[in-house]
Length: 515
Picture 1 (cartoon, rainbow, N blue to C red):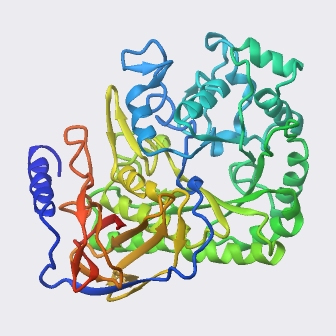
Picture 2 (picture 1 turned 180 degrees about the vertical axis):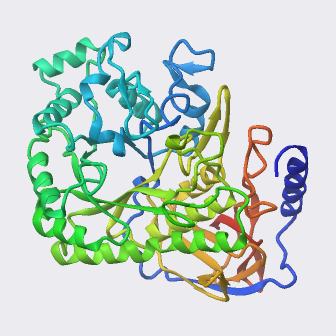
């Protein structure tokens, strides 16, 4: 539903939720226990990382419109997108891919833009890649946002020397041939590259390699990434496994575990199968439950890959980077299927929230994650249409979860009814708790049931205020005609008998600070 009727329904829904919290008739009774005696490893801000690939309208039109565009911009970057991303304090951005990384020659993207070659983007839609956004444009973009750069190198179609030269071009302060070439192209001082990926999906679009060969490639290529003297070391990220392909992780850790700083893992949430992934909107409750069940499988997948890593790296020198994750549906009708454009609904917000909660439970190993992708592609933060821009329900979850960046997590135990649908058995309420860098205790509460409210009781004292995100339907979403139909509103807990409790509407995500 969209248009005036949708706006009216959403407005009335927001008015209803803005009233003081009160126990709702028929609400399920849920208890939440926070174990503050057993803090976990720090929640690295990079867990809320982003991914920007040369794919569809993710880079061009999404981030970059060029300095001559009528769309308000700063040096070619959209002002509205810059402002929205600054508000959520994006910690790290991965670029240029993705599958695109292993057909990318970095030299195509430097020098005067008018002289850069055009190439066919064979992975994504067969469109022309103008290379208007290259090394300088991307790294200046990360600096403008205050984000770290995570650059993915090409091991699929370029030799190690090309990767080494790119790294030197970006990072050297010396007056070498490559350092001086960078200066002639407009950048005097070197950039700081905190993360460098040794390829992408070597098991698939990055070269269709066997695990043993991929491990040898990792050992070989990483040798030539030389960190300049006197600068912090770069984290070399090995191209790792996907889903439940545990054998790939086994081989990578056994054969190359000492030649990496992190190992990547990719896991996408789909509703159906890879041929028919499901619709982004207009889905049934069975599809709602299936999507959330598949999202929550992230816990099992991270647990089992981590267990393999523990055998080879018991001291946790190698981090696990879940550097591609999120929902993947069938492309929107009328769009180029190679552009992977999809709408983003309240269901996606719940997927984002439960996934971030899972990462909070695995901070001993998961140190970075990157949702796919930042703008106009898959589970995006932002959608654009010419001069128009909107933020999605997923964006609002990342906004609300900012308080967990750098926080210290605590085990959170939820005891209550289950949400059962279409053969899936899920906790009705998911929760996360952490002590923020400001010293306050923060709670995230997610009600996965699309119909039933929950009354969550705790042993905590004091007061709790924050924000809640919900909507009038499972597929409630923002459109360019109604860009604020789904957005967070103020929310507070109740204090009866000296104990905090929370009344969670159906299909909602709340984050509160306990005072």
